[in-house]
Image (cartoon, each protein chain N blue to C red):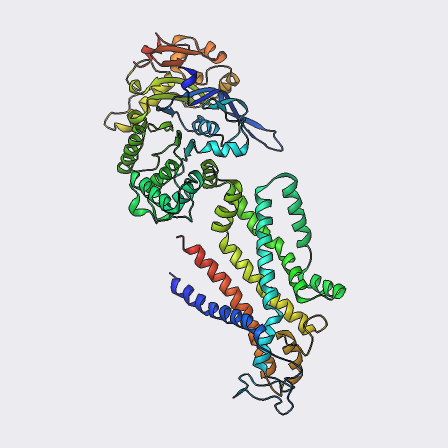
Length: 273
Length: 338
């Protein structure tokens, strides 16, 4: 039941994810000089031959800027997703399994981080350090560690009292193996997939927000999806393409990643039944 | 009992459970009360007794799956509670436990073959991949699960889960298997399969500590039977004598009658003087006395009730390898069973 719908959703969102990954991988290898791309003979062209998404207010190809714009969030997003997931899983596992000062220390640190409002804190970091997107992604990852750790900790605590985990102890497995393989890998994978795609989506969101607000994100003339929208703000009523294309790309990408994570996790869960 | 040949030897085991309540203070339940237990290589020792008598706790204590308040557990002469964690893991392959909950022995996300492979990888690190696979197939064949090897626990039946758990345990080549209710929750035909399998393995020089209140199973495969009540072992009897002798502890007698009644429906339930089966009267004088005394018709009849409540009855030998912890033993016992 619902199996075919799940599969369709998985294919659809998988296509979005695959496309973004493909763009993200090839973008760095496409030569592009944003200063050189300005062409005042081609302002605000509608989509057509040569410019599949048209051109912006300075005659630059929107499709090209969209492609190069992925560089602003792709690697940082992957990095943040990986960091947050790995550290979140480890902190959750440690605080769920260990006792005493270790558990208390980890839990306390998590709670402390969790009190920070994410976007505000990131903007605060930006105003102080004016950092690269990588540092921003790192901060975002750290901010996500507590929520992932909490989910994992609850799971570890719940499974820790299950008889079959005791049976694994009785069988002679090392606690480290039980924790990392039998609990985290085999039982928490769906949770981790969900969280990882969420963090990736969040980094794109942060990048867009910062670039749109203007002071701390990617600076013109370098493209990013956020500053593309920001820049085309003035073109309302003149031409929709320069802002509609990146805006749709942002929404579709974030939604696609979240849906993919969710559906993949569900598929992973359902495989057992 | 020669001390040298003991595989497992436990002395004076005491285990208490404390329930903590902030307002009313803690309550202590005594799960094991000075229990001695010896298991010799190649024999099957059965622990019987009602739920809550401490059978499972005893099984967990002698495999060090739970802590111990007092006493000593020697496995092959080595103090199990003195070895460090790393060594304990090494030792674990020699004593394995089949858990009562049939899903408990298996990881829900691994197929039977994956689990066996993992066990072999852990316990027989010398084997190559091909050897492991061959070995896993042999084990699966032994428990009759070869056709179901790639299934996960969710798609196995209760009996198959039991057999899968057993296969996994056999992968470690254990010297002692603690089997907690290996046939509970199975229907008659599947139960017989498991009993046959256990019997066949017994023929292969395996030693069991069998925890069960299934007297049919106990009669079929056990050599020695220990009867537990309220954390104490109150009788040791050779399995063939179980239910065949008149010299039983009054409590064992009651267990036998209950089992026979359950099995033989044709027999009309006669008036019996079985009192409500709770120990209370203040937990038999706070356990200084016999834990069965408040329910014991024999003690009442013999007029020794006050003694039974105050003193803990020592083991009284009533036959070869047969003792009873009862002040009524041995002569007067015959009268209890009509």
